[in-house]
Image (cartoon, helix red, strand yellow):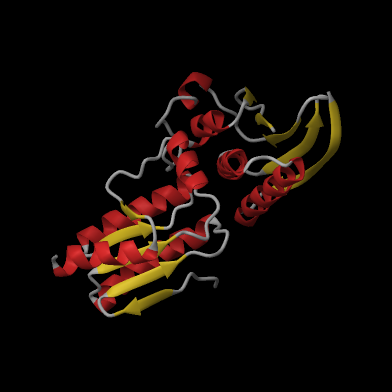
Length: 134
Length: 120
């Protein structure tokens, strides 16, 4: 699998969430992704970037355009040095929230992408990687 | 401060969201709308989201809150113009917007509001 291009941008303030969405949209368009798949990925990015900002205390988004020979894909990693998630099972339950949200961010984002990877531990920050292929 | 304009047309308030909203902007709209309903005694609110190419759980929640809030203040809310890709994504996300009235476009939404407020 080849990485065609990559980059990083900050996710620290509210405006960064908007910028993260815009970057994701641009990447999907470059890959020629269908509108419905693009919309799902951009929505997942919005949920995860907000989590990074609100719960992780800010962090970064790494982006990659992938090529596995047959198809292209967009991979995004949201990482923060925040408190981490103590109970992953609970955090991945629909409707559960540690903040004031609806508890749909993490679980919803997982449903909207093809590959979802969560790496977190208390005090070690959180790292969520999502991928969607064309 | 950045704001989404609210237009008044008789006893109705019209909102067209045309920008990529950050969270604070969504919250400001929520506050502004409740204030305007109270000030103008509006009976209906039409929210046009045809220009929105993404609705996440935060914006979805704002729409639900506006709808509930206006109902308590004796005004009906109708959400119009949701793009098909947005609708599919929203349902998959787990948000079906219970209690929020919707219409396909502004014209139908306006008719729905008028029927509710003025009777058939």
